[in-house]
Length: 537
Ligand code: GLN
Image (cartoon, rainbow, N blue to C red):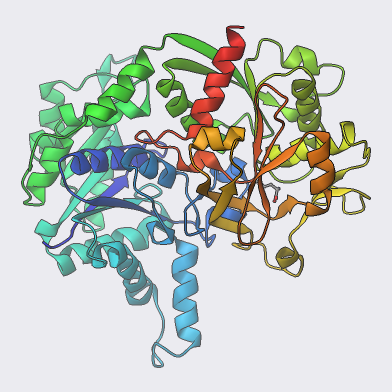
């Protein structure tokens, strides 16, 4: 195989410019031209991983098959490329320092003073090359989190500078994402922040090869010429990135702007062939030409922050497009729901998803929601905590165990229908100790789940500590709630259903993490269909 080439994506001027989407879009185009590509993200914060962070801090925590708790951008990478990521695809400053400090404690540095340069930068460089060294990829795209100029980003930009020389300048390409603001009072697009941002890069010894410019207005030739002149890039390397309706359009916008071609020519690679994007375009067409629409309630406690349920929102976009149906998501705060207002809050919904989550806040609102939709035969989909709440609700209102609860919320309940796994009981450390990553599940034949998946053996990703308490299995089965998916190795319940209900399914795992444009998750596809059928009744 030829030598692996490295593309780096940095950001300047402000955060939230969408580096992850640009990286994923470029990767999609290169993949569609026949290259094997992966994307990794380096985050400059001190947490070892985002697993211990509150969603308000960091948005959703994305979990990979190998059980890494990672940045939500990895979700975009998988959704765009349809290739799984792993622990190696997300590295934080905390992890880098942890490795270096462990090395120091085991005497690996032979008495040297351990310093940011070379020890931290060497470890960053080692990790930057890890996926490339596997020999599996033609191109590795590395997104550097944060904004150039931040103190915490310095070691990363320095590592990138060094790596360019270690690898050879033709084997690397640096794409810098910036903002070209439009000043209404002046009636002009302004390039100065971009000039300063590139100057910031130059001070650190890195000349960007390509500038991707986020802008609300088109960049005319004069502006492009000016940016090229002041920032030492070719004019065709000034790429316009206008705001679009959906992130899934970005690869096509980048194709038009030739981001892929300019990158390949910088890396001295051939364009190979025109990108094969038939399925992608088909998906986009369906997405923008829906034949119907449904209203889905998303009941959670982080509803103010759309990034907290990122993968669920995206999985609905994929599942909606498959059904040629627009999915309107109505986020409803579970804290505000009680027996007096539940009917009003859930009015006009065609289906309800109860979201994953941790802790006590808003739990009774979720349980009340499920009571209402179970009694009124409204399509229900519960994920992780959402499934656990369905079990608690069933225990209380059908099986008659009024005090039933999860021991996460009430350790003293006499009916711990959701309880801590044995293996979790002795754990003291919080980080990385949940049941994480892919586990197998066997589905009973003839059930809703088996119809949805079209098979009886599946693998799905997990992130939880608590489980269905199997002591209640026989009683619940008799009462009408069936445990239709079981982990074949340890008998843990993975899927519950109420067959008498129109559509009632709860899953202990996180199906949203595996939904991609090429492979929309069947549970979301089928749940949207159930909502469409309910809507047309
Ligand atoms: N808090 C629950 C548990 O730890 C559910 C977790 C989740 O929804 N991801 O088991």
